[in-house]
Length: 94
Image (cartoon, rainbow, N blue to C red):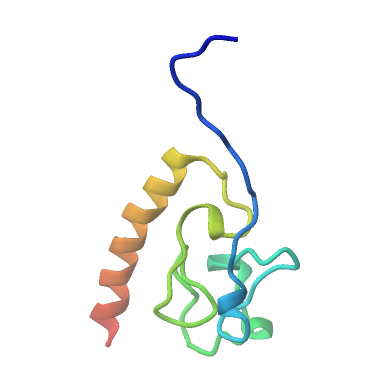
């Protein structure tokens, strides 16, 4: 088959082992964020976590590494843009 370009979609593995013991992850290693994070995952602030905030306050996850994300480039870019806004909200609380 002759093609001029190809996109290879491989993986679906989050590569988050380095976060072991730092943030809550699901059984496959994807980072839990937002409403998925609660006291049972170590959340200890009076407020709810921001949408992309992990179980460690102030740490935000974007894109494919998040549990239950859409796993597409466009949504990962949107997550990244939203994460910047949430960082500003977090810093405003300090």
